[in-house]
Length: 469
Ligand SMILES: [Zn+2]
Image (cartoon, rainbow, N blue to C red; front, side, top):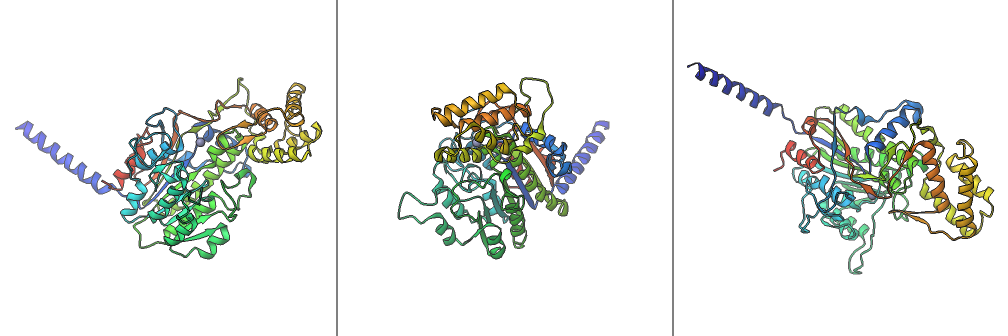
């Protein structure tokens, strides 16, 4: 008898718990999925320290996502490699499946996979895909295409076919097909109902059109946007694209809500050549873009979910360089140009013979890195740089330092390596690493992500909370 009453009570309690949980489970109406390409814990910590020491906006800022209530670390490996690439990692983040290196939106047998962006579109959500890199490159592509990464033209076409509401990026890679009977990508997007807006003015004059493809104003641009370190903050970049995306998608009142993927692509591009100042400034631009999502969340706290993570780590960035000494993060602000653009400057001057003395080369390096002028350089360090100058610029005998996305002049590479050492950081590679990467979430059903520890679990949890089968 006693047992019977006891079990009855438990059935009632369990039922009440079940009903309460079911009723309180909400479906987010607005989802921001922010991916810092190549952004490691070290990138995050260094950027936060840079903020705290007044390196940006007089120390008034702090990385917005560090305050998000859900924190985790996620594994990033590909199906066939411990160290992943943006294609396999993007596929895991977009579809919830591990695949091989260079595979975009396809499984290891090359069968197409379905992204959460397409599934949410089919449920009536508006969709926006935004990147500071090229729109048809790996990470954004994983949300709308099923191809090998090198098939940028076909990936681009699948973007238009997806009929997502808002696309934004620096440009479209390989807009012309090898098959001359095929239309160029820009014409194809127009055919599929997209308005192509270029830059801030282009967007402001054409923003009321139905489907938007927003690209940089410079139509001759073939790769990424200029790095944030070389731009004024109010110029066209990731932050503006996110602002435009929120405006466009929120205005589509006939939709159920929206899903927006935001990629900080240039964190990776700056980290491949181990350019710390550019990588920190790109992380700042990524943070400024997430801040817009956070402002939106504050207006719609019960309906908005923000996820922040990375696809993999790039560069093996380490806080510390062989000694237990303080970091000199203020040196980051003395660098005025990215390593890539400083290399281009030196390459140009080498061709014209303009840098015909060590003093001239030293002055240009000093103006653009702070070395000598603001950062002490000892005689041995200067002798090493001078020797590099004679070997590579006077005698023209050395090969360039080649990384995935750029080639650096050896003298610039040496100067930036010295700067990294002076700041107090180390890098282990020009490629990616297999380190775990950060994960943060806030908002509607964010607690469901509390235990994620692999990249595939993120889209699968999005499916669970949006009731996608
Ligand atoms: Zn990369």
